[in-house]
Image (cartoon, rainbow, N blue to C red; front, side, top):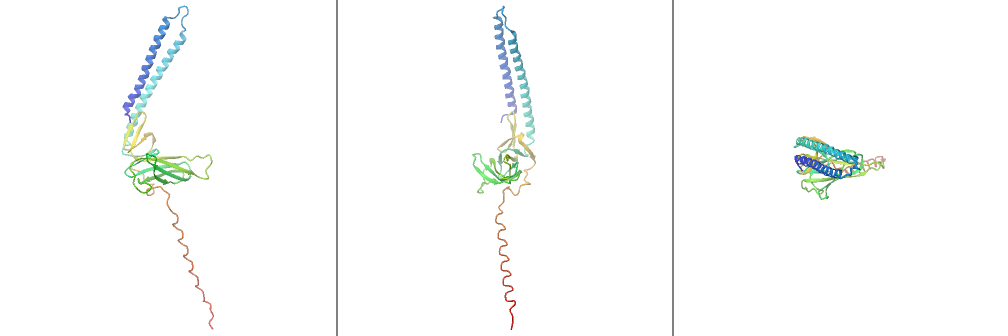
Length: 266
């Protein structure tokens, strides 16, 4: 990232270049105008309206350059203010709107949001090469849902720490309106380990993941895991748990109990 002071100097240098170019163009215009005035026919002098308008245009451009210069200085000052604010994030945990997540020490926490109910939700975690590392089955209800990832792939083997990409795919509910569009979004949670600026924006570092400070949604003293159910927000396997539990329990219990009870003795 470019340091804000260097970036401010670069921006101000552009304004200075524009001012110098305008000054050179004005000098060339005045030199040409002087030569035309000296060579004009005294009996048919030049119309002063045209070059007067051109001088006015030069003045307008000069004013615009000064306005841009002031705006650029204000922008550079704003970046410095953002940098000062960003220092307070160091060591804190933040939630930021992004489609990436940082796996740190075998732990990653992220969320996905749905604008409406879905039939099915699948969240793929991909590496930087685009290969799927882990797939989660999500809650299809509208709202924000949190997932923790223990840093293992589909076979249970741990993967390397680093930045991974989140991809949410949905199957829309059958009772949804034809013109209804199901929107999804993702956020990532992690600890701020650094900050930087490029002259126009301030960025926070969550390990190797760089995020725009304007995308921060929340700040926490510790990683919020209170509403996560035992790690992964994955649909459980409940099939067959109760099947056949009561079958045959009472069969034959009463069969033959009363057989022969009413035979007559002679």
